[in-house]
Length: 582
Image 1 (cartoon, one colour):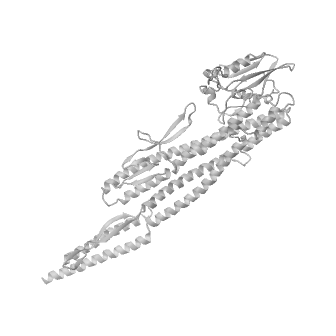
Image 2: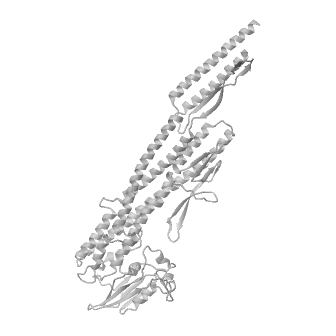
Image 3: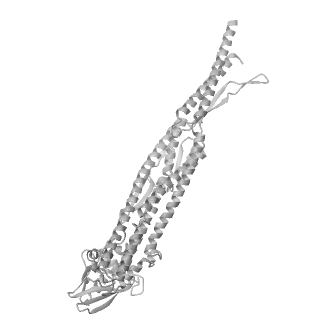
């Protein structure tokens, strides 16, 4: 080994220390940069040369590689934690908002409105002749219908807010997958399949991937080229430098409209594959929209539908103080459906209703000016069996059959208006009342009802009753209270259509379920936030820049550089001395 080899050894030390100082300076410069992973220089001795039988001498130091300090397993756990924590945050916020909207146990909630409504009917049953109590029933009925409509509107506004947030999040996710695909391409080109890694580009990509994880629960698979594939529930959304893109599909329900339709999360490619996001902001926004909020809207509609039907079914029985001489049902029926059986699936008007006409009958009572009464039963045949005994609807009762049966009663007339409503009116000096409607046909057609509408969306007091409370059915004569008493007892009556619950129990169960889920969501969010903080702390300890550590490295590499420079200076002096001796 000569002095020339010694100079080369010194040069390797200078080069290595220069690279190490640059990496250290880069780390210090990025101490506050979000998403930056500190980089580390890996040095190793240059392979020695063999001289003689037992001599190996070194040739200096070399830079093996510059690596990012990162734990892929920890990064994967953190991404999963980010997705879960963001999803839990959305779930908690939505359920807290729903609890605020329902406002239960405050005295200004739906349960209180129901209680006031049934209390008013109970008071009317105790004092059936009081016009003041009758007016109070009309007032409470109007207040209840208004409260239900307003509450449903509030739920719809909350659902629309979720859809707006969802649309914004999907647009951002679409931008992210496009940017990640572009960075994949840049990383593959920069690294060209070698062992060296472009730490800055990878940091940029990891930052975007972490943001995407907050929106969707993703799986990240790194390829040998340096690019990453991203999947959601086995559905690829990024493959190398190709992005499939993301979008929302709005699908309306026929006959209902886009406002009540479904929203689906899909890729933009021609296949339009469905993306099954279960966590992250997008996953939980979809879940909250379709289950938490829509579920409560459905519960409210179930309650209001049965409230309307059960009250109306009872209210049709009785003789109002203001004699009923001309009344028109509020249910509009398409012309083609007027001649179809009520239970025929092809009868779109009635098939779409949340309550149905059943096999049964009802009484029609005609009263003259002297108080003489004539009664006739009208039967509603909806057994789905034809005259020959085969299944079918040809012989079952239609709206037109009801109109003809009513029109055939002496001193009573019935017609179907051009608008498709059933109108019933009497001759002068007569009034009509009804009783014992086991079929529910009068309530469905809207004849002599208390409410009108089918769900919370269109629930209202029937206009005639709201304008004249004397049209409220209390019983079948002065001082008689059978109708009012039966309606008051609906408070606790079990309803088959509500799974055997009463009207008040059904709403209490819905609210209680929301409260339980809200409490669980709050606990889950807090625990997941703690987990995420812990994982971020672990990542910071491993990959974050420590100024103390970097300062020590700076001193070390500075001394290495100074020592190498001094070594080269000494070798140079020896070389000059050797030359001067020649």
